[in-house]
Image (cartoon, rainbow over all chains, first blue to last red; front, side, top):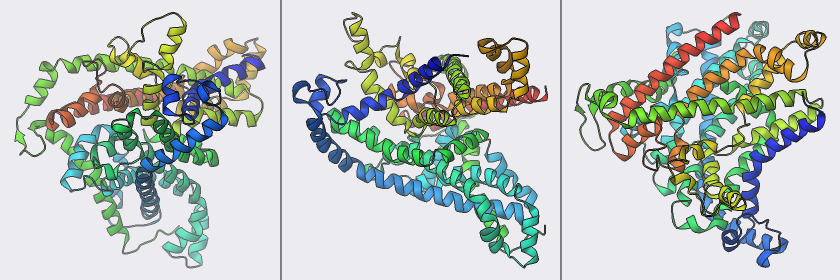
Length: 282
Length: 291
């Protein structure tokens, strides 16, 4: 379609434009607030007005500890909420899918319907009645007010993809194990586990990412500053007296992006699978 | 295969089901039920019959305006999908797998960045008085900085432009998977007939990508109805109501005006729109797959 040079030129330009704001943010996090105000787009090593490589490191040395000091409570909340929801999602979904795919119990056919149908419900539009439910349960301003909805959202999706994964598992292997007297726990842990690990990784990762990036729900449900998560915390930092402190803000953006960006480069494969699997859900 | 029986199966399913009942089916039911109430926090809900619906459909001038905005958003969002389509095609044409994966990772990276961080970054770096956009215009001789987000002419466009050049994520992967699905014989046959390059892309590959295009269109439409967080963060619906999308009005009515019942009517209406869209696009997709 295009020759070699133009292909790379187009792709590199697209990637560059997409990542340019991040580069600017990273750059500004190495500069003092005063320098950002006077020259918002100068590189931190440019040598303007006493700036330079060393001065940049000095400014970063001031910005990052202060940003970390502001963000640390939010980061701890976020890791706590995301960690618990993703682990709970994986454990509950595996057991649920196992019970439905490998087990028998009264009413099995009918009990599956509400789980399947829930996949079609657009969550973003239920935010108001869900808020009312959470309020009714007395869960406003609590970790549970975040963890429970995230986990339920995750388990609906998890039930769906894990049911699929279990359906493709070779029946002969389960039969062979059963001949040797394998009970349900043995079957799940020793026979099925290796087959389910990739799907579970994807599920855990998606739940983690979804709850990490969610802004509106924590913003509405947890207005208490001590319970802010990263996303609502960033919004909060922009709204209060730290708003004018650009050096701190840019360092805070970097800190909020860094953990998942690192995770992304470590496991791109799983993110790609997760993104593709997520398409089925919507 | 013999299926298992154990005493804890049924109780376990019931526990999970009650979680889903509390956090999915109760809200779903309340969306419908609360639509008939004047309901604000701290007050006893009062039954008002169809009054909320009547106000929504005939008396609230913001509703039709917000749907016009939604129409613009939908058209714009669909137009932006040309970028991931072309990017996927160019990416697919690269011979080295390593390079392909490197580019793909770069294109997907923005997806793991919290949306609110992206919006705040654009707010400060691109759209503020000293921001990149005004700076570029300044080089071109434009004098006074434009207040992109508080000028009704530009505000919606400015909100939509966040994420430029729109290449990230799901669409890229979908189109890429679609291109890998096409059999080589199709390309060879086209080449034998002298059809190469852009013409092959437009007349051979693009028609064969119909299933992926249909999926992307339906996902885009549905997600644009559910997107209003960006408006909340960047313009708070303003200036005036020039960026108040239907979803944002729902949020506004509930959490700013304290009218939860009325907000549920808006939510219900959007829910029905999504349901209709899902129905239409599923049928359309089924027809494409049947071809």
